[in-house]
Image 1 (tube, rainbow, N blue to C red):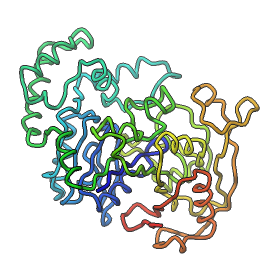
Image 2 (cartoon, rainbow, N blue to C red; image 1 turned 60 degrees about the vertical axis):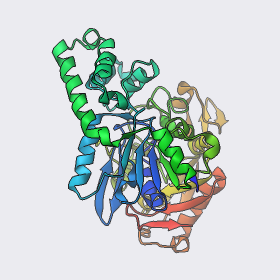
Image 3 (spheres, rainbow, N blue to C red; image 1 turned 120 degrees about the vertical axis):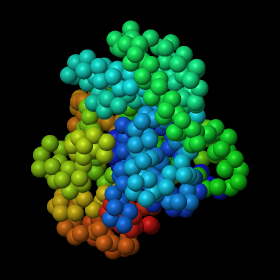
Image 4 (cartoon, helix red, strand yellow; image 1 turned 180 degrees about the horizontal axis):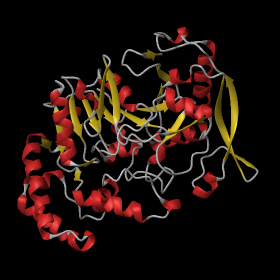
Amino acid sequence: MSIKVLIGTQWGDEGKGKVTDLLAEKSDVVIRYQGGNNAGHTLVVNGEVFKLHLIPSGILYNNILCIIGNGVVIDPEILLQEMDGLTERGISVANLRISGHAHVILPFHRMLDHLQEEGRSQDNKIGTTSRGIGPAYTDKISRTGVRMVDLLNEGKLTNRIKEKKWGETLGVTEQQVQAVIQDLLKFGEKLKPYIVDSVSLIHKLRKEGKEIFLEGAQGTMLDVDFGTYPFVTSSNPTAGGACTGSGIGPTMIDDVIGVVKAYTTRVGEGPFPTELKDDTGEFLRKNGQEFGTTTGRARRCGWLDLVVLKYSANVNSLTSIALTKSDVLSGLKELKICKAYKIDEQIVTDFPSDREMLERAVPVYDTFKGWNEDISGCKKYSELPLNARKYIEAIEKEMEVPINIVSVGSGRERTIIR
């Protein structure tokens, strides 16, 4: 029996969906532990593309139990749409379970999210997806939220929603509030067979010796505590969030696998020291198909940042790395890796917590020779071009964490296990 956690080491969009799908094959249980439908995991299986937003990536295997943990915030309407979409494509959702402790995203949260973003000055816009994630987590922390189990109790649900006085906050009418309550009760009735006491279930499975895999959404640099605050998400995508978002204590975790994209991207606002606003950045965006799974927004692209990655390795106590999208770099004559920042004439190798310092950071690069070969067909590490291996080994050496998986394409089969 082992319990593994998979986390993103950068600003999300590292390819966690593919790696989860790959590693889930040897798991019995896959648990999504935080975030909401503001994130998306793209999986390619036998040439067919699946985009998941709330349901754990293991759902594509019939024999894997998939649990949406208590740390996730759930828009029940979106979840039902996702379940129906999978069913229509012949994918069973019978093995899906939902924590009764997970909090609910209300339509009012989406409205509030949009209004808050519109009210921010241009310099302070977060780049939120306006899907109600932040306001839902705010209600959770202020102890005024609605949980999935509340959808099964009309009296409790009604009281919880009316206590918030949404009419005063958003100007909605009593009729609108009642309509939302009725919709939520209908959603609750449909989801009732899937809602469980997830903590008891997970520990029962653990004691039975099941292989458990925990997947997060977003990435370390979007963590509300450790990321580039305030340009972050509203939860903890880091390894610590796996514990609080599932009910599994830290002493039970055996491995923490960090997913590293072979270059760097981020969506939305916020500092990005290695961002490329030139032809190379456009090359990475085009070749890597760097557009958001959820929003379709073009991702900002830049060189790999080791200052960020070393910070992520520390925050998450990484035991190994899965390197993704190395095939996207094929065709570049020269590659660069940021090894430090120059801030106000000082060389800095520790990631600064001060946003203003980070905005002044100028990358200090090491330069590597690129390669022209198409590596997407490589099955063994030794088949990779020499310059690709040198690039990979430089990352491994600097991070002091082994790179055990090298992804050379989007499909399951385009993966090298070292």
